[in-house]
Length: 69
Image (cartoon, rainbow, N blue to C red; front, side, top):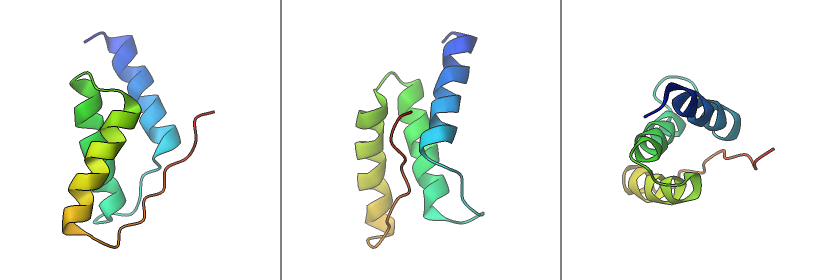
């Protein structure tokens, strides 16, 4: 994958799903979204997959996802 594309995806992740303190499920969400983005899925597809995954472990999880700029 192109370096510039990876950097753009990382920037989008940082802008739309802010990091949280260590151990917060928000960070697990970011990790899963990032891995699916790197495998070629869209941001929205990745978020849906990640939310389903994280909510299996944390049913009451309320993600902090910002709209695109």
